Image (cartoon, rainbow, N blue to C red; front, side):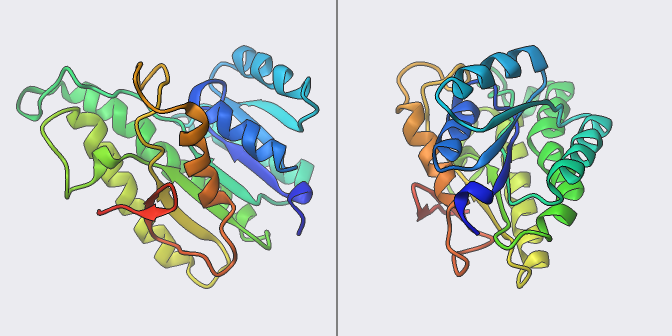
Length: 234
């Protein structure tokens, strides 16, 4: 299968790392579905990429809404009959103002709803379509903040949600082993975005770390945790 034949979805993709991942995948010739909670913003972002001659399709997608996910799955099946790449990028709430002992559990629940259950819902909906691909790839955009090895006392909601996402990556990868679908968690690093703030590395570099997971060969790793193609400790 050529890259031009591959169909990809990137969630939370109207800005930041997600938008740059869309750009890089589209530059490789893929048809990329740009998922955005705000379709107007997603359409505006996709239009700029279309001006560069890239195949980008904006779609409304709220990863906390099962109906929104189901609607997109139906659209993808009807239009393409399969999915080749799923990048679970949508993420929220880097809650540096909280500590575990006094965290607002509503905030924790909100983080988990997007950062953990969002990718889980997406995989439940799209694994059947990924099974129809010759080169299925799932990249769960995680963070070293979710590493038990190096975890500190900051951002408890975000950290716990990403640790749980890593556990989901492991279990799904084990389930799908031998199916041709590779499933990995990728940390883009500290990137200068609206969430990451100033001082991080260029968004292009963070996105490239994610794209590496998309472009793995058929004999590439699955069930791993990586940044810039190198394993991270769980």
